[in-house]
Amino acid sequence: MADSLRRLINNETCRILQEKLENWYKDYHINSCDQNLTRCCEIMELNSMIQGQLFTILNKTSQEGGHYAGVDTIKSRLLPWLGTCFSSHTCGSSSHLQESREKDRWMKELACTRDQEIHQLEKELNSTRLQLSFVQQDLAEAQVALEDTKAKSATTLLAAEDEIVQLKAELKASRVKEECALKNLDRMSDYEQQLQTLKDEIAILGAQKSLLQNRLALSRSPSPRSIRSRSPSPLPKRSSSPGRARLTNASRHARLVERFSDIYAQERLDAQSLLRSYVDDLEMVQRIIYTAVVESFRAAKMAFRQFKMRVRKTLSLSYSGPESLEDMVMDYIVRQEDLYDVQASVCEVIRAMNINPKISFPPETDFIMISGLIRELCRVAFSMQTLDPPLDISFGTDGELFSEYKYRRSYDSEFTAPLVAYHVWPALMEEDTVLVKGEAVTRRGAVRSRSRSSSPLRSGSPSKWACAELRRSWL
Image (cartoon, rainbow, N blue to C red; front, side, top):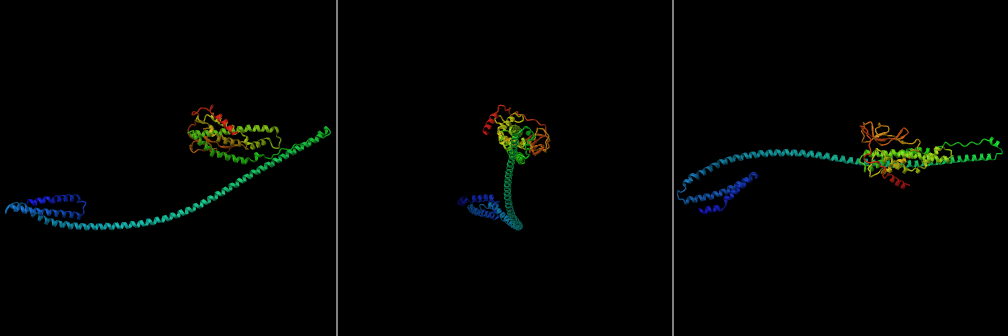
C-alpha cells in the first residue's frame, strides 16, 4: 500500500493535472472550441488515471484492514458519492445533448447570417468595382481631353510665338526705316541750311559788289553836283528765310520732351534708390529730387540768359548779314550748345540745395551724389530755352489746390484730399499748355513745412571743394 502511494506521489500526475487546469483557464477565452475540448479530454484522462490508482490503493487498504474493516466508511462515503456521480452524469449527458443541439442550431443560424453578410458584401464589392470601372473610364476620357488641350495649347503657343517674332521683326524693320528717314530728314535739313547759307553769302557778296561799284562810280565823278545828282543804289533787303534754329525747332522739341520723360522714368528712380540707402524717409527723398529739378531749371535758364547776352554782344559788333540779329544769335547757340558750362550750373544747384530749408541730408554725405541727375536736367533745361516758344516747368507750392490738369496723384496719396502735401515731379509747360504731367502727393490735414532739423546748413560742407574737383575733371 505504501509503495503504491509513494509511486503516485513520485509520478507527479497530480501536479501535471493542476498545471494543465491552470493553463486551460488562462487560454480558455482565446482557444477555439476544439482546442478547449481537447484540453478537457486530456484532463479527464489524467483524472481517470489518478482515480484508477486511488481505487487500487483503496482496494489494498481495505484488504489490509480485514474482512469487515472499512465497511462503514465505504457505505457512508464511497457508495453515496458513486451514486451521485452516476446520476449527475446522466443528467449532465442529457443537458449536454440539449446544449449541443442548441449550439448546432445557433451555428446554423450563424452560418446563414454569415452567408447573407458575405452575399451582401459581394454585392457591394461588385457595385464598387462597377463604380471604379466608371471612374477609371471617366479618368481615361479626362486624360485624353487633357492631352488634346495640351496639344492645342502648344500649337496656339507656337503660333503666338511665331506671330510675336514676326511682329518684333516688323517693329525692328519699321524702326530702322524711321531712323533712316530721320537721318535723311536731318541731312535734308543740313542741305537746306547749307543751301540757304550759300544763298545768303551770294546775296551778301552781290550787295557788297553793288556797293563797291557805286563807290567806284562816285569816285570817278568829275564834280560834286554830279555826285549829288546821282542817287545811291539801295542796300539789299534782309532775307526773311528761316535759320537753323527755326528749321530744327519741331524735331528738337519732340526730342527734348521725350528726354524729359525718360529722366522721370529712369534717372529719377536711380537717384531715388541711391538716396534711400542714406535717407530712410521717402518723402524727404522725393522732396530732394523735386528741389533738384526746380533748381536745375532755374540755374540753366540763368546760364542761358547770360550766354545769350554774351553771344548777342559779340555778334552785334561785326554782324551785317541778311538775317535778323536775334535769329543769328539763336542759330549760334543751337550750333554751339557744347560751350554751355554745365558744371558751373551743377555747382550752383548744389549750393542752392544746401541752403534750402525744406530738405535735409545726413552730415557725412552730400548732394553731389546725385550730380548725374542734376547735370542731365541742366542740359535739357538749357536746350529747352532754345525752342520757340521755350519750355519750362510749372511752379508748385506745398498746400496748393491739386490740379488734375497738371499733376497725377502718387500711389500713396489720399485720393479724396484736395490739397497738395508735396510735389514729386514738376509738370512740363509750353506757355500755358501742359506737355507732360507731373506727380504730386495729396493728403488731408494741415500742411506743415519740413525743416532741416536733422542736419545743419552746409556752409562749411565739402560741396565747394567737390564741385571744383568735378569741374576740373569735366574740363
